[in-house]
Length: 457
Ligand code: ADP
Ligand code: MG
Ligand code: MG
Image (cartoon, rainbow, N blue to C red; front, side, top):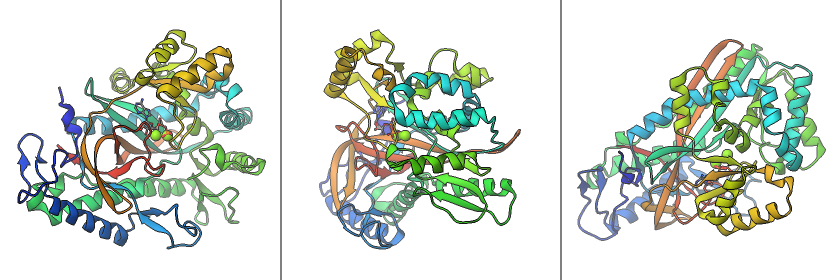
């Protein structure tokens, strides 16, 4: 069995007192003592490095941020040192990546399964409904997507009670933060290299991150499959972007939230793109496979068997499923009302900040039940995962704090297929995010979590 402490910051046990240099703890390869002077030095160096190497995000408090290039930028929130992470979990997540890629693709081909599973959700969730409408139109047209490109990210947390790596969710659209994840990995390697002796850590144990390069390669690979030299890759960051050239690949960096569709024009654009011959990343079907409702359905008995053939693969995938329930299950709804702290209530949304916890969860369930409303179908219930917590140094707005923190670990994936030929099915780097143990939600951009990297132990 793995000790929960294996998911602790590399200097998780560090106390900020001056004792003349760090010491290695024999068990975890962690630094037992980090002098305050060293911490200050590391923070300063990290802040300078971030500015110099583009580990930055838009500053919400700056009026021209996002409007003028190079204006209103702030270092991204980051953990000062990497998270030590057991190779057992790493290997498990890496092994799962191609299985989930394949699973997404197979499920996406079963149009009836998507329509049926989401039918009740559709009645009460108009956003999912609109996506399903586009999907239904494509089914009617019998539109086949020969070339399919998936840039995915499967997110996990280690469950402290069982030491199991459990899946939080599987993202199939706008799997962001790959650039920042690569940046923070370089930052950590650099800091450790500069202070190798004092920290007593090996910079080579920070796992290199290939997310950006491999996702770019997959986009280029899809472009090549389209086989038209004068075609372009269109990245949807704003609705109705046009460029007068044949489009080989459409990458949706936007389009995952109702806010991205303020009017009918955006829905028309999404439909137009879906009808086109361009390779969509994701196609409407791949997008729908990423909904929480499909995640919950796949966790039901005998559903994985519909899509995967290999028994051993099915077992590996199932092993990382946390408890997932539909709200039609009365007894689980009662349990959640009794002990809301053990559950997360999730709508069909992306981007962080949408889930319901604790007292809110109880009240929401009680009022939904009282109304006897169909609204229940808009949500799923999930077992709350409690990852082991450890003390971490976290830096935001130029200030370093020490916080009891937990981590969420995501593995990026790429999948490119042309008819029967699987061209790419890979794991592509990772995203490690660390947040205060007291917080419910995650998300770096949402303002909860800090970028981190993996220190393999
Ligand atoms: P989104 O698609 O909005 O990112 P998630 O399912 O990833 O939705 O939930 C957002 C955040 O909520 C996660 O990053 C994680 O911090 C927290 N969370 C989600 N599910 C669980 C769970 N089962 N146990 C503990 N925390 C969770
Ligand atoms: Mg998501
Ligand atoms: Mg998420």
